[in-house]
Length: 468
Ligand code: ADP
Ligand code: MG
Image 1 (cartoon, protein in one colour):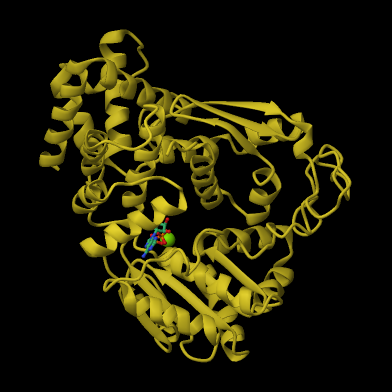
Image 2 (cartoon, protein in one colour):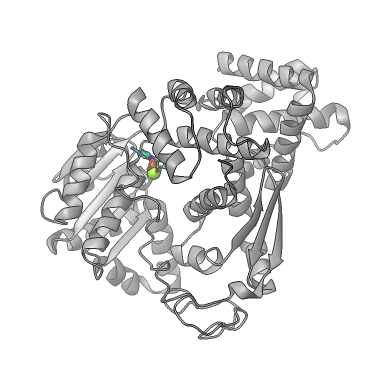
């Protein structure tokens, strides 16, 4: 069964974009109407409703878009837009509304009005809950590692504010915390469409608070969140040492708790272990239930892969699922990343199903990427030693091949072996994120066309891995 991976890949890219945008409204306004025509590792061809859209995205959101594509595809495709005016349809009204003149008109600054007044308001897709659409209980695989938190989350969803309040889910990255907390929101909304639900990261909470202070709209900010029936705040470890945000959150928490609203928090560690979190918050958080998610066991990992493959209508032979699941252990996001890569490879190779060899190739890359704690300095040192250039040359401005190639290799390795973003890597080399993206892309291509290059990179990656 040959699949067209375009919609699947574009959906994943959109998931990533949504995570990176400052507000859900920005996502709804600018990305919901965009369609993908081609998604491969070399080209991302998108359709947008008007030139205004294209320009707005290019000016404001190109970086999150490029980063998202890179994180899903493992490559940096060239991004191109085509204007397709038919896309400018308000989903709930039969008449077509040209996007350049949205309902309510543009504000003097040329921005379409945000929040409610946006031209997409009324679309069932665009609510301001911030919930991520794919993360529901239905798509969540339950195993020994997450059974407790799943049970707690379902109970909280069925009787919000009544059983576990707050519910705190903690655990390592990529283990399903964001998924579970969103699932609670979706279930509550399904049972009670009128419920007021907000999901956001603690970081967004802080940014919105700061924006409200600057705009003099603190009261509106408070009222908005204190109205919630369910408030889901992701990654509260981010609040550490942010005293003013903690203070604001403390009052929001108390107001909601007092009103019997459900509060759900996630964190990468138990609240007590978050250094720089005020004791009064810690003790509030522990009033309810604190549960953890652990890394999934082999059977759960296989089940997750298979469920995802079915959802993506991709034929994943059992032995290949097992092969991937036995190698990628710690993190469901990486497991999914492997599967996506496999879908893309299969399609690019014009095959109807993946081969074991493709899976092996992908695994070789992922196993390296698992090493999270690598210091970029270690990478710089190894590259300097291997190519016999000086550190100053590597970090400098010269673009002769003898230093440009090692520099690109270093960028590629940083992208692969650290969790730094393209922009962060760019800052190390005093360059912008597109330069880094092209470097990564180029090295990736060289690895495929030049056997020696591939060996060099693998050897360097290994040295770095061992030397950290
Ligand atoms: P966290 O917030 O803990 O870092 P996420 O909730 O973002 O992790 O999960 C990472 C990815 O793995 C998401 O795409 C999510 O859907 C998926 N995932 C995690 N756990 C499960 C599970 N038990 N079943 C299905 N998908 C899962
Ligand atoms: Mg998360």
